[in-house]
Length: 208
Length: 251
Image (tube, rainbow over all chains, first blue to last red):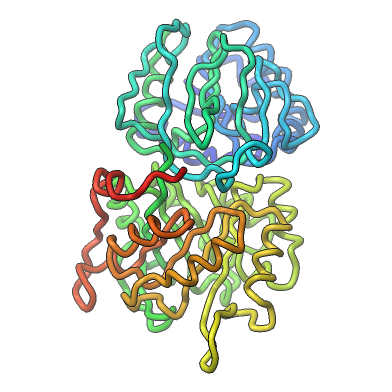
């Protein structure tokens, strides 16, 4: 069973629709106790960083997700804002992120001249030669795979151990972060057509 | 490598998909859910959905939009009658990436500022519904003739939207070709990504505009709905590899 966190920021509808399409059982999660009975967690997110943090705290899921990451017995996938929330902080806001993965989120506008938000389809280059111990080990991306991005803030890893994939938008930025069984993806797999389906299938079917 | 986008633009009226000419005389095309299915299978870049009656009727067709969204594993934007935070809450919850605000912004940017704070700038699109005066040159807003387009762009930028959508109402449904001058004017004046829709004659017209201006995306209506001008309905979209090869890299 895959639990999709629903705290009011995130297009959970699309995530659930894609999971149904690939034949995975899923449910919506809005309280910590519901996390106990599921194998995998998806933290979607469309919205502002501080709002995401506040809503996670109000629901009690902030600490619950941190605990789940520490226990390392459930696969966790953060999507877009959900991925950024897994880090320490963001230039978009002032609140602290979950801190599960060692990275911070920065503002494109201060660093590149191309128009932002980064809005459209782009390639994701997975770092090879690494063992992730999560579904990324089973994810085979080809030259044709493209994912849909829509974001103004991007993940930056000083810690190369958590950097799992890069994407080019005037400069290379981190599009996937990974730490043990927790992965964050900047793009929207639930809106990335066949490439997104490939990723969701890999996540849903991975056995640790 | 980042790709500029070619986006089918669908108009809804009642529970049907329609095509208009200059947003008048809607012609029934078919079932929007089925059309979404077809575009989803063709793996289009993104779909823009506009409900042309929603503002007048003060009613957003959430149930229909929910069904439409459930067919799409591709990005969706919606515009039409969005006036409140609860409207926007629901639009994102059911599976739309971006909400297009047009007339709700006419008198106050409060809704946009509040929406950006909660949903993030990447989720909110400011719409410029553009027309040309009968006499004289230039462009103006169709529903807000007292406000200059440049002022509206500034209002949207200051309010924090993530994208500007230019809807060329005069060219809607005409196959007259995209207005390159309009596209250049808006994209030069504005720092945000710009999408333009209205008048695309065929996919070459869309590709040409993307390659010669700083516009990031084109919305295409009639050319992807009809076999050709004056002919029957044929939902179509160019091959993805054609678009990838012909649209220049954005660097």
